[in-house]
Each structure stands twice: as C-alpha cells, then as structure tokens.
Length: 147
Image 1 (cartoon, rainbow, N blue to C red):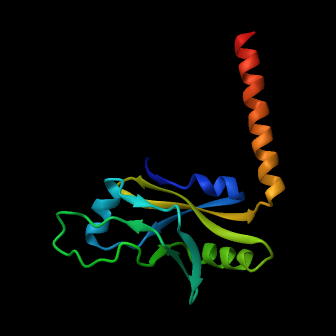
Image 2: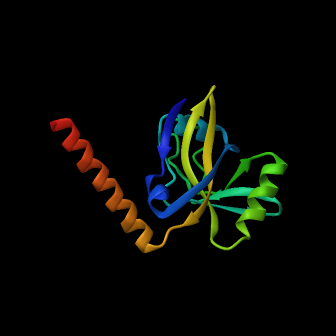
Image 3: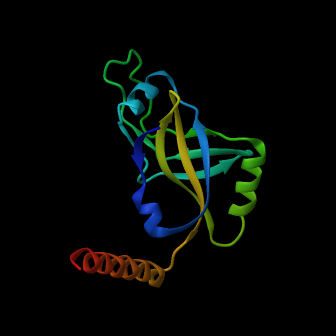
C-alpha cells in the first residue's frame, strides 16, 4: 500500500467511529496524476446523491503529458462502494452529528482507493482535551526516556 494523500485535519476535528475503503471513478489521465501524488483531499467532503456516494472538492492536478487537458481538477467523483455500505452510511449520516470524511488516498494492488470514515464532530473543549492528553503523553515519554 502506497499512501498518496492524507487528511490529518480530520483526526483533529472529528471522532472517527468506523472506517471504510472505496474505489474512485476516475478518468484516464487522473490515475497517472494521482499515482504521482498530485492529489489533495484537505478541503474535500463526501455527500450522497440519488443513492450514490460522491466526493466533492478533491483536487487532482492535471497530468502534464495528457492528451486531454479539459478535465476539471475539482470535479465531483463517484465513490465505488457496495450498496449495503452506502445504505449504512446514508442511514448513519442522517443521525444527529454524524458526517462522512475522507481520511486518505492510497494505491492498493495498482488501484487507487480512498479511505473514508463515519465521524462525529468534536466540540472545542474536546479538541483542547485531546491536545492536553497528547502533550502529557509526550512529557511522560520524555521523562521515561531520560530516566
């Protein structure tokens, strides 16, 4: 597995409940561009339309040597999931506070995959608590290392 893009902010802003793996419906030159690591999912989000899941705002830099330069870099792309997974995600998303966020884009067995998660938004005090816990753990690790 080769990681191509990561969304670190998702772990800061959300409690990750369950992770899913999905394929992405791409056009020709987008695959080469993504495999070169020219993809960003920082500002992207996942939504549903007509019983299908789509990723919005994922930026794929156009492949320089492509014959077709007319592909929109931030176009909406369909996610390839099983029907049962889609129904579960849509059902959970309608519940209070749940959302679906992209976590990472990676290459697996020559295919481009995206890891998405069912997540619940953190409040500001939750974010501060996470930071405090992380800093305390670092301090303990440093003390044990020096001891």
